[in-house]
Length: 124
Image 1: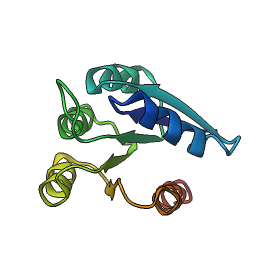
Image 2: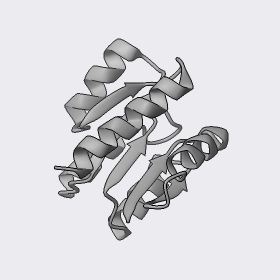
Image 3: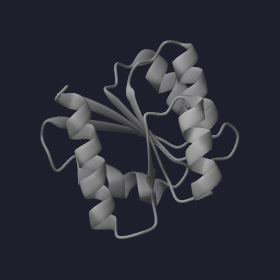
Image 4: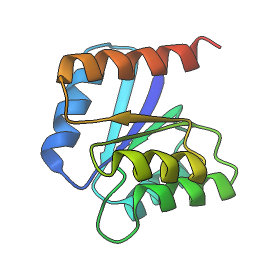
């Protein structure tokens, strides 16, 4: 079973993404509403994929990624955010994220792309 951790301060976004990804019975999704909580869960869980927003109160997504990588976390990390596309992409990738997916366009296209990224990683 593929284990995914979603990190976003918006509970509605967490629910939408979780429902989209859990339509496949081979995927288990855990959620958390802050980067601090995400760091804690990632430290104690064995996640294949971590999907995080970039801008959150307190610790942001880039800081979360940087801290995870400093702890040798090798999960696929995707920043899925609609903020600061130019600077945000650079900040996310420079922190150690594997992918940046822009949010705010056509949700179906975004979820298709998200699944594609996850599938490419899991079939390596």
